[in-house]
Image 1 (cartoon, rainbow, N blue to C red):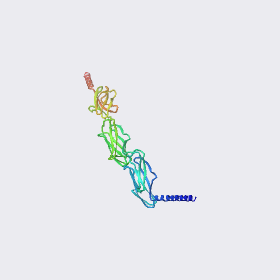
Image 2 (image 1 turned 90 degrees about the vertical axis):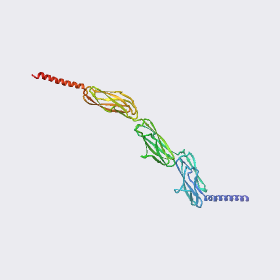
Image 3 (image 1 turned 45 degrees about the horizontal axis):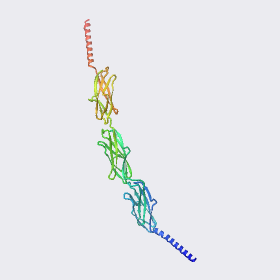
Image 4 (image 1 turned 90 degrees about the horizontal axis):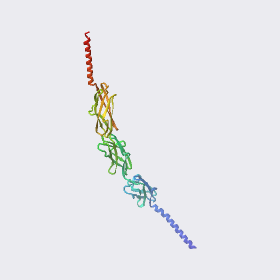
Length: 385
């Protein structure tokens, strides 16, 4: 019985000694080390975003500890900064039983694959801290140039205005030179923030609104034009294509073949006037009809009365036949002529002078002569009485 009791007492003493050793040795181990701690060890970010970790370095020892700091695990296109007190650091000293905080900031590149990444903060002989980064979407490193409405339509005398957006999807500020490959004779002008520009500066992951104004050449042919637009520098570039549909301008002119807008006619007589219908625009004129306004009892006819089509720059002859009223008195009259196309019209005013017929002049002379002869006869016959 005594042996059992002595054996139990020896076991209890050994157990107490072991517990005492453990209780003593654990603080001793902590007393000689530096621990790294951050509450957020796994953060998510999108391409181009920044992450920031505040990491505590806890000195559990009774002496000053100097810690060499470095990081690893990410490729060189990830920008990583290690700072304390606003300054870059590579080494930090910690007083006994004190804590210092360092900041680890990470700039995620734009050109990065979706997935999980790991940044390791190394504390020399004191160990390391792993920081996980989850990239939530597929990234890219590029510049984007888009147009709100890339297709415009108008006449050659129209101005085409395109609203563009230039996006810098890179990790650094970029200056982009702007250029538009407009057809010969066209004018291309860029503006941003109300000012005419030939280049723009854009911060990382930012956009810039740009206006492109295109003025076609005089009498540009009616067709569809493709205008490539470029924003570029030595590092990156973006392209877009604007479309301008020229429908042509409509112009028409009506005159006489000799440019003289006057004619003479006798009362009740007719007069032909050679007129010309000109297409002064850049698009075809179709179904051109000729009409007139004339004094009462006058008649005006045209040959041809309708012109099917007149191409740009062409002229078509028209013969106008004017017949005055037989009751027309001598003087000037106005005959209005209109050339009406489906797209546009033109007017001309002809001054027509009515003159007395020579025949009736001679009749008048004969009547006057007859009256004088009658008076003479009466005077001779009855004058002697």
